[in-house]
Image 1: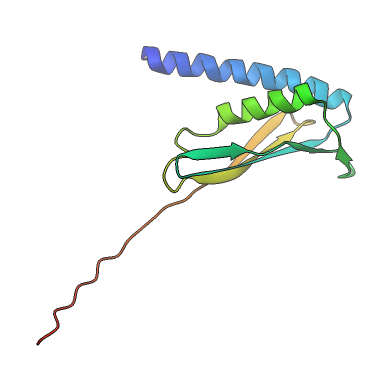
Image 2 (image 1 turned 30 degrees about the vertical axis):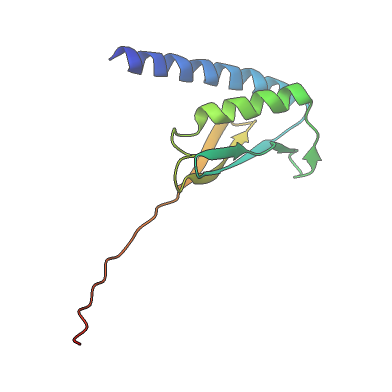
Length: 121
């Protein structure tokens, strides 16, 4: 494993560890799921404010420090380059009971088709 790969693996392990700690706080608030949408293009991107719901799908208010932590961790879990050119969008869905985080990611792809015509004069 290269040094870069080792550093990436260590950083991801730290993100997962911090997300596990956040899940403990979410469980204490009776949160069942958290959605964190994101959208990037044109060399900038935005991670939206996380929204939380209980097991009955009723909204749960999150404290500011937990919102900041979840937003920062989301940025670390989004594939690099998500904000460049045509960008990407998606959401992270945290299932607190299952202790899982699903990333639903969509890359935007630009294509072009060449067409040429010779017009007789």
